[in-house]
Image (cartoon, rainbow, N blue to C red; front, side, top):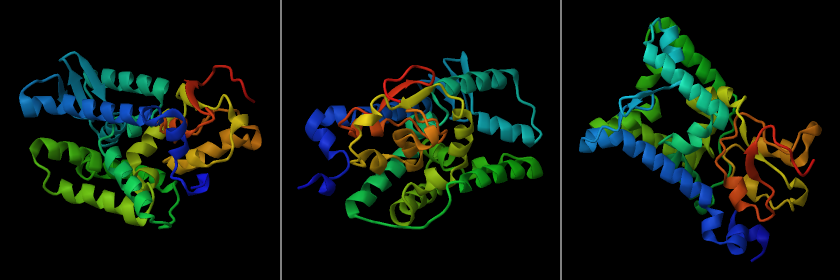
Length: 288
């Protein structure tokens, strides 16, 4: 079978072994599972390491963490945040300025494994094409959530946010949350590749605004070695972020600066030429 007939990443597995070809994916799944279990250990087992949810939490009754998107909605709704909420906000924003705002999408969000599974199954079933909707749509939805919060005085988005619904469902019983999660899965499977996360989710859109300034990036220290196998493009959930850095479009440096990069690391794993790697925004590069 020729390379063109192989599935994306098959060459990497043959060259580097299965573990090296899925190391970042495995770490992401472990991270997502650990974060979720930390929140569920209290309600499920009475072990209250983390109290709260992904919107607002206390770790060991000491460390507050606040979702900046939630707090912005609360402010627009006329709510006055407590001091600890503001401290939690500062910690989260500082953290994502360092590691990248959309790291939340690929390393923390519990809906990500659902949409990744849909994309994996979509590829295995050979489902092609689908709806064509601008990725900018998520920013319009983001703006709409803020307008609704301002107009209604409520954080209305959290009532239908799939992330919040999944978290609440795991604690109190899934109920209608099942319908929402299944709908997201089926939409990504049959209607549009990475449809929800890549085109509609306002949470990811908001974190991309923070990610615009992040320090941790995907760098391309050996982009001249690229053999145009297209595996990186095939596995990337935000395919539009790769080409400028890979091909030096308009003089772009060998670093992915697009804020919608989720730092998932899949491009690193599937590349047999070691074109990609994690690095800091300001560090030197070998290839121009």
